[in-house]
Amino acid sequence: MRTFGWSLAVTAAGLAFAAWQWGWEAFGIVLILSILEISLSFDNAVVNAGILKKMNAFWQRIFLTLGILIAVFGMRLVFPVVIVAISAKVGPIEAVQLALDDPNRYEDLVTDAHPAIAAFGGMFLLMIFLDFILEDRDIKWLAWLERPLAKLGKVDMLSVCVALIVLLATAMTFATHAHVSTGHADKSATVLLSGVAGLVTYLIVGGLSGYFEDKLEEEEEHEHEEEEKARAEGQPVSAVALAGKAAFFLFLYLEVLDASFSFDGVIGAFAITNHIFWMALGLGIGAMYVRSLTVYLVREGTLDDYVYLEHGAHYAIGALAAILLVTIQHEISEIITGLVGVFLIAASFLSSVRRNKTLQAAEGTAAASGEKTEVSSGA
Image (tube, rainbow, N blue to C red; front, side):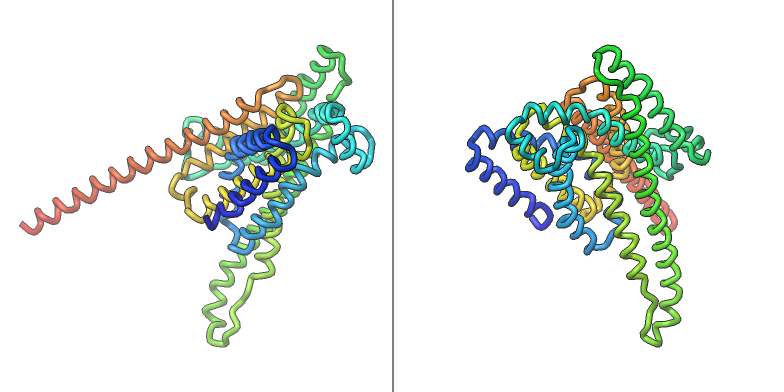
């Protein structure tokens, strides 16, 4: 209840408000949208937990309070309005008025902006997947694939090169082909520009986050040495300021990551309703559960117990990145998108369970052998 209390309260209040304000149809649609957001973003929670566990309790609370305000109002309400405002070249207030008075036109404008959204989000998520899969790790899930990729990862800037090649191929294949087959405007330039923007965003935010995280680790090591010397004077060295910088950029990285994960949910919601406030309410409730689940995974140490979960989540990120890029031309059901992520995470969880059972059995065998040796020695 401590972790999911706010999520349950927001769910009850949100569904009650929807039923009171708009009726039972709105109640059902908001509930469906909430489930959609949770299913599409479960992999987001696993990845977020891997980052959030590096923060202290204060920043975890910030993630659940200020972070959820950014996620709900920024991505689930303001972001669709901004898309329409830019696409239609109107002001934000006019865009909201358009959403209320002419929801079909509003949906058309958001759909027209989808190639730019998909390219930006797809490239950002692709970089996360590539940087994970190309890094040499002690624990490997799909060793037959991860070992050779880890060797290739020793080449500098390989992930950036691969991402740019994928972006170029996407722009030349999907965007141009969509122009020829449908007669719509050529979106290749838009896809290229948006994809590069997503790549640059990842490099800037991720780079700053990694820099301050490394500095924090160095400072903590130095602090540990200096504390022994300064303890007698009662003035231990402090790394609070640096920790604040590191946590801030990690927090910023989490928000951009959440935004990228939210692209498919926001666009997919238009397949269920055109009502902007139903959409914001349903996706907002789902976002609350994603954040609560993230904190739960950190506090319970689930990622430490089930070591392949992080791998499964990153494979789901790679799949989502590919899906976003493919949707520039082809429509893919949100059900498929959600099931791919759920399948990969479920497979990684089951693999973790099998690994834990194997380790426990091995430890039991070793303990039994040790007892037999002691008995033989005593005899």
